Image (cartoon, rainbow over the protein chains, first blue to last red):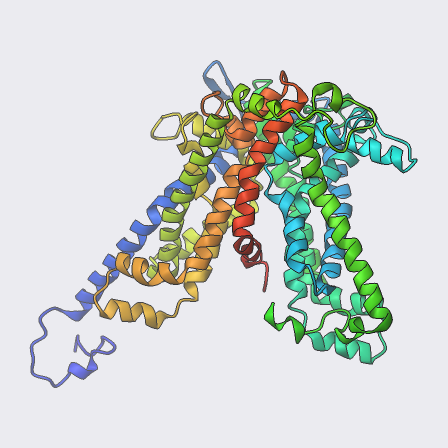
Length: 317
Length: 295
């Protein structure tokens, strides 16, 4: 009777051979052994996640409500949040970061898509163009930014950009010395360094568009522009909206551009970003707790943004 | 790429081969090739030659297209002053170590989650994937605090390469890529191996890994470039001059070093990544789109 309840064991019924081990127990033993093997394979990664990902997430929230002074940790409620919000640079940092994000979205979102659509039409030099556009992505950001800082954004006429502008008869700029140009200049450098990835991702999704759609649109008399708006964009909508979200989350974490190009804060705080403020508080003002609080604020803002964005996107479908 | 001639894109192939279409196509292509070369190679050229100029020449108006009096000494100066050999070695060492740790531990974990499926596997996978929602910079402070004084063990990993290697393993994107690839390996293959008496380790080693070479390549490339390009994390956890990475080292020296020497150092730091890219460009560019962004 015990045997009959085990699926697959039915064939044994009627055979006279004695069953050496209770098959149920054997199966259970095997399942335990399989589970143990599974955990053994998982343990290394799980430990790393636990120490360097899961625990810090909790620790970040906890320490934002604590204050450690001279080795002594006390609970301080919302004091860290109050202190960080009252930092004179707090709102400037958010303003700068949002400004950078919006500018980078205009430049780093529209331009790569346009380039991908263009590159997708070429039947020649495809490999060459793709290698070129991805080359800056491979450079260490610190290297690329020193190139911009010392050679391109030189405020005298000896700089690359100013000499080009002068050659074209256009007014030159003070670049990082000018509070108005600081952000556009950082966006330019950042777009140059980062857009290759987006272009290649768009290219891959453009190649998945079935040719018949364009064929049909053309037969219906749709011109070039109509084919872009009625076929290309709807067909790549999913990837376009996903990339927009990823880009916003990435550009909100602006840090190395202000650090290297503007020595951190820039003239009159024009370059201070939220992450730079975190870095300032954590490592120069001896205020790791305040920095953690700002981290939590940023996390809430970004997750809130992602949730709202995903919601809006889902509603559109 | 082979099917390119069959599937048409925005503009039909035939249209580009005759009359006006052909003229526009070739003009546009020429313009784009020249513009791309100027925009993407131009700055690199400017950087390499800029580092060859003397300080007065660098400040000269208008700038010279080719250094009038090339100073290769700037490069040797940078090499010696910043101890670039040491910095390059450090960065290389951290990158290779991160690669080994990620390949071993992430592959093992993804294999367990995909094929061995222990009881709490899905929960663990979910918790790993949840970390993808957290922007890296947000965690930088608590991660730093953790590394200074590791919970339970109470040791500090500052200036130890483990502070780069172990956090690199906690990469949910790797696990996701690897698991998805392993999921596509037919169950028949696995059970056939089991029938032949192969244990889990054996199956992983002689069945799963050989099939998974492409995805392992992608993960490896990501692992190496991530360490090479990273800045803030190594700046925080590798503060000593002896343990710095190349990017951090150049930044640390940029204050008191002449501009042309800093740029020379930046060129030297970029060379390994460019060579690496030119060798692996095919896998790098296809790996990018294998990143799960394609439906």
